[in-house]
Length: 375
Image (cartoon, rainbow, N blue to C red; front, top):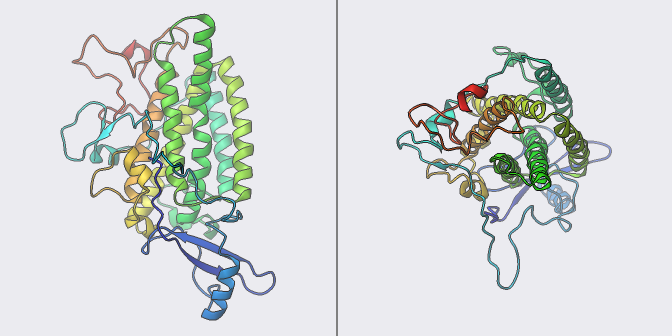
């Protein structure tokens, strides 16, 4: 899981003209694809000898990074000891993948992942409106920071040039999104764990689903981090956002767990929109590098990606499917009584002839299951 897929990175340098020449290095993971995002044209070096001399000065830089190579060799590297070859995680993806098999419970199939749709649960009470309003505020801030604007359907061509997304901009957005998305599950699981110990009572299955969600979001981050390394400014933004978000969510979960789960449900709705747009741009040929670019080995192992479906385009399908399930799970948990209701995603039901919540995409309730359907 922790093995790297990068082999003999190739760096391509470009410069800004005139005063204060600045070089930006890009890191490729194969001869065919790299995470560039820089526009071609007059800014690229024309003189090969000059390019070589300038390349030596920037050889220790990475994709949109200001961190020297000597300081950070690789994100999440495998252990380097005399006796340990690699690490095995006891946590695997909650479902295994089959591409052409029957529609079995708790599975992701390729067609099921492609059928994921954008959906929105209407706010029904003050708790829902607080959650929805907070998500919209955070979405505005994140869009501003990452230079993103989601155009209305059919008006994509009217976007100003600064909002046109490329592979590099998408990576920045994904990394920022996933570095924060792993917080709610960990906070909720931690608080419920402590509550169970404190009250000496069972938790009825909520803890493992919340921690599993947090781990899943972290695996999204690890997969994208194999493609690019953020610089100090991005790290600073993530540090600030995570610090504020963790403490805010911690206090909010103590006050109203149901509002927090509704908040995460709305947040995952936005994540599905983001990844759906990225998939649409790949299919429209606007992100050509990702069409055939191999997915990182860590992602292939985690999702058990089948042969023939190892590209970045496939990876984003898997990530979107995960976010769609998180959307469903948190909207469902937001409909339950957190103090006494069992978690329907780990429950064994008396009647197996009626549909029930599952961890796979065989059954997707985009707006969540109502309490009377599962309890």
